[in-house]
Image 1 (cartoon, rainbow, N blue to C red):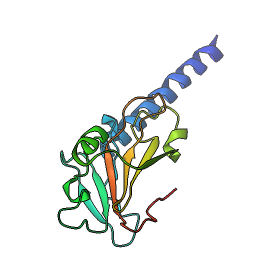
Image 2: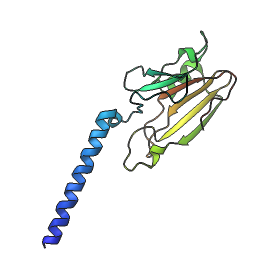
Image 3: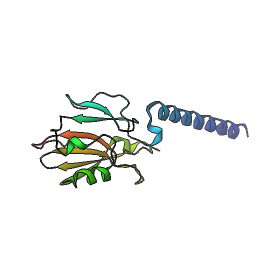
Image 4: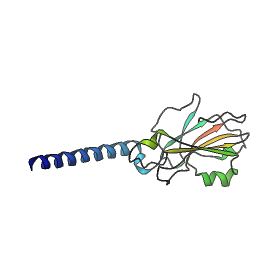
Length: 154
C-alpha cells in the first residue's frame, strides 16, 4: 500500500513540475499564444535586419532591401498569406518543410512547419506553416529580396 501511494505522489509531483516548466517557458518567450517567436534572436543571415511584426508580438527578418515601388516594398512582417496574395498577387512556386519544433512533444505553436513562396524577379517569402495538428500558420516571418534567385534556405 505504501509503495502505490509513494508512486502516485511522485507521479503527481513530476506532472506539476513538468507543467510549471512549460508555463514558465511559454510566458518568457511568447510562445504560449501560438505565434512564431524569435525572442530578440540574432538574424540567421549576415546583413539581415530584425523587424517587429506589425502587431508587435514577435520579430521577423528582412534580408536585402526591396526596391522602391516593388511588390516586396508593400509587405510587413506579420501579414497573413491571404493578405500578401491579395496585395501583390499569387507566388510562382511554393515549398513546405517541417522544422525541428515538429518533434517537440505537446508543442502547440504555429511554426512546426514552414512555407516558402517564390516570386520570380523579387525573391522569397517565408511563412509559418502551422502546427502538427493542421491549425494555425501563414504568418509572414521572413522577407528575402533576391531578384536574381537563390533565396531558398531548404
